[in-house]
Amino acid sequence: MNDQNPGKAILQPGLNVWKKVAAENVLFLIDMESYLEQLKPVLQAAKRSIWIIGWDFNPDFDLDQGDAGGSCALGPFLRDLADDNPELEIRILIWGEGPVFSGRTLRFFLKMGWEDHPRIHLHYDLAHPIRASHHQKIVAVDECFAFVGGMDLTAKRWDDRLHRADHPLRLTPDGKAYPPVHDVQVLVSGEAASALAEVARRRWAEDSGEQVPAHGSLEHAWPSDSQPHIRNCEAGIALTQPGTANSRRRTEAIRLTCDAIAAARHCIYIEAQYLASLRVTRRLAARLKQPAGPEVIIVAPQTTRGAMEQLTMGEGMARCLRMLRRADRHDRLRATYAVVPAADGGEQEILVHAKVVIIDDRLARVGSSNLNNRSEGFDTECDLAIEGDSNACRAAIVDLRNDLLAEHLDADKAELARLIEERGSVIAALDALNVRARGLRSLDIEPAMHHRIASMGKVLFDPKRPYWPFHRIVNWPRSLFQRLKAKMHFGKTGDAATCGEDEPLR
Image 1 (spheres, one colour):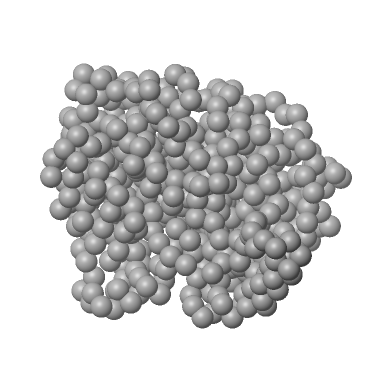
Image 2 (cartoon, helix red, strand yellow; image 1 turned 180 degrees about the horizontal axis):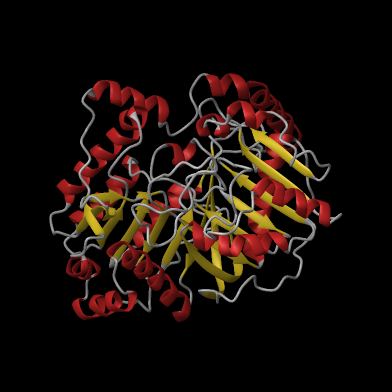
């Protein structure tokens, strides 16, 4: 199924990615246990800089959670790193409302001890429109290594790849058990890591006002015995920003998703916490209607968490799912959720928190962007995309898709690959292997009982752009300045000024 002549490149700088950069090494990390195996040694090797950018951050999070005999709280661990290295600067930027949603409001905003250090800088991100969130999940170390994906360093994120219904180590810092959770992160080195560190510096400057100069990538050995999945490839970084007084609007992530869907020839594989974007759904539906279009495989949650999520994302997902099922004229859609067997003989759903899009053997996108309206232009997001520019890279992209799918099917990855090759269809292989107690079930999301209330909730809590008139009021002084500047430039040169990086949102 490999296509040796894929045609025009999907990644287009200035259109659907902020920039294209060289990635020296790329390692895909499936589920938090794999992430922590790489993260801790990378942090321990830091010499000059650690950037932690996230939706949430829990200083009690255990970096050794997968080790039954270990315990390493994140906050004190970072404090020890700063104490041991007089040149190390640690900056942590989290969404200002993240602790509120995590239920740690009062304690988090009080002094905790570990952060009371002259070279640990903790900042709460409030530089966003009303009800928007800072949603990027980046860790960058010495501008040499960087992690990006769907995982925050906080509670209820850890699990291993077995996703057992009951796991004695799957506990919050205060000892409460939580259900299985699936997620994906990626580790990169080289120019790609330096670029992600630049994303962190820019976001920090936009929110805190502090300009932190780059110090240049430092030399580090690869962190572990794990061999990179890809070496020496091109990567694209796609950003989403709503546009504020200090930053321009960016919508590269949704453009990348739509362009990738349009470029698919054989298989579109999606893992998404939410599938509530009509823009994405319409493009998937159009491909499903085509007689020779690609197969579409979606793994998403069946169950929403709480009444508010049901009235916003749940209603949107139900609507999108109906659209896709109506468009599936050629039986090329599998919209599913993942389960494992429970002790009582029933099934336990796995919370899919990943944000992954894989297109044939051409592109793999891992990041923080959900497939909902907020992630299209309201929240801040950061995604990394790898485009297959060599046989080895294309093979690695296919291997990632097969690895993820095999995990959900409780199948051997090599057996899955063999069946795909034999049958010429990923869906045919999926159907053949989806016979075990652990597997994928057909997604069936019930619409909300009160459709009008749900529609209003979606408009309020899942918008595509900042609310008017709040955004206009906040940005009015800056807009006026830009207009006066443009008029002055016109008077001097006779040509209208063009807006660059600081173009105001209109």
